Amino acid sequence: MRNCFQKIGPLALVLRTSCVLFLFAGLAVAAQPEILAISPTSGPEGTRVKINGVNLQSASAVLFGTTPAVFHLVSPERLIAIVPHKIATSVITVLTPRGQSSSRAAFIVSNDPRIPDEVSYKAGYVNPAPRPAGFGSARLWGIAIADPRVPGHESAQVEVVWTRLSCGVDGSEVVLNDDAGQVRGGLYSRQPWFGTDAHDPMPLGFDLTEHAVVLRVGQRTDRVWHFWSPSPRAALPPGKLEGCTVRARVRISAGALLQVGMDYWRSPTVPYGAGGNNHEAGASDWYFSSPQWQEASFTDVGGPKF
Image 1 (cartoon, rainbow, N blue to C red):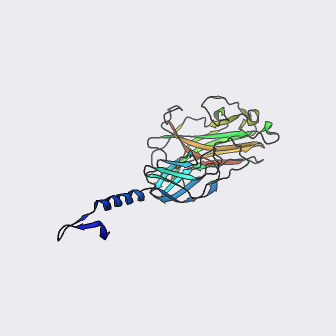
Image 2: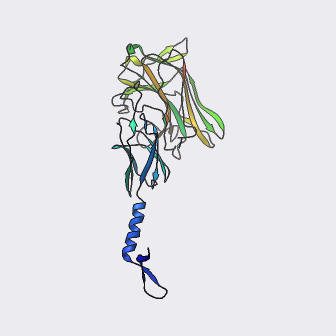
Image 3: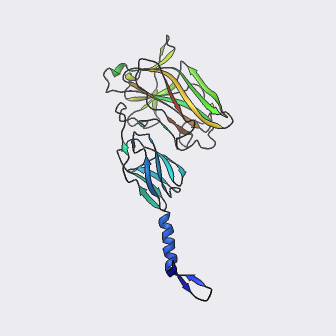
């Protein structure tokens, strides 16, 4: 720095113009993002990936290869990103107005082979973007499908005895929906996965002995059997919301699989559609066939694990 100053009097120094340019260039370089590490380095679609680095605070996008990912800024040194679906092993890139940085090593995509390729997210996740302000209601949902690769999948079915949505508020659990022996829903596009909102009515069977709704997914392997609570969309109770939990008592036959999750909504009455009316809280891992009854569950209590 000694050579950057010019003496113009007994008590006066000025900073040379060339040094000013040098200092400003140094500041610009320092503001560029840099990825230092990612964790984990492998996993299925839907995995939460911690991206550690510097100068991440103005991130405008996180890319896996060329595919944008949902992400959340934790601090200037950390981002959380969700591995998008339909991607191969690829490097992670963070874009900012100051530049971009890519991970030194690629994130290795390793999906569970029991989950069909066309499924959107292969693993459970909590949305790293928190519930927006003003979203005052919630609804649980489920997805059931058949795996046509499994012999005898034509008779695959999922039985649902009850579904329940509860939320933690001010340290207590508040039940919002508790429905037995019924669901609502429709049959949606499977390829592409939920390609449109157009859907067919969902045929329902009933097992009177088990008091269960029966989704005979093997009869329509070309569709996603998407169901939700038959009760009205529940308003969130007042107080400090800690998160919500979905539970469903189900029995899944061979050749079928199931996932549950939930959405936050602007209000109990705003219809589904464009305009950001719903915000997905996340989804569970997939549940597979078992002769025993299972409790499928998803929770965003505590939020993403940063």
